[in-house]
Length: 126
Image 1 (cartoon, helix red, strand yellow):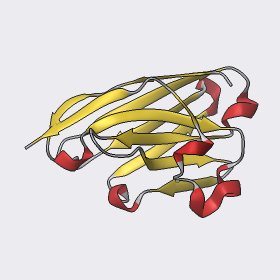
Image 2: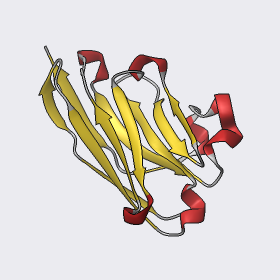
Image 3: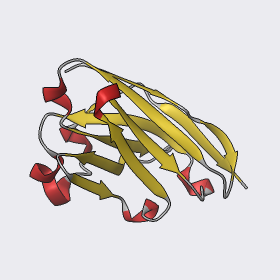
């Protein structure tokens, strides 16, 4: 399936910004859809945003604040996070799967479809 390696996490005050990066390796077939999930302590892993094959999906909680982008030449996907809130605090995971994002459509947020990177911590304080 290849490897996904995240970077760019850190600590920031509410209202601040962070940019996460994910470097991918291996056959591009296995990452036609790429994106980001997050998991806070005691909570289930949730979809944040995914993109691929001309389709992009965002969780309602991040629409208008987060932007996902992809650089196929660099085998990378990014998550620009603006207007961060304390509730955005979580471990963020790069995720990918072999189908185009639109093939799962409204189910894009289900974590069982994806494989993962090791995660990067994002902490937002008041």
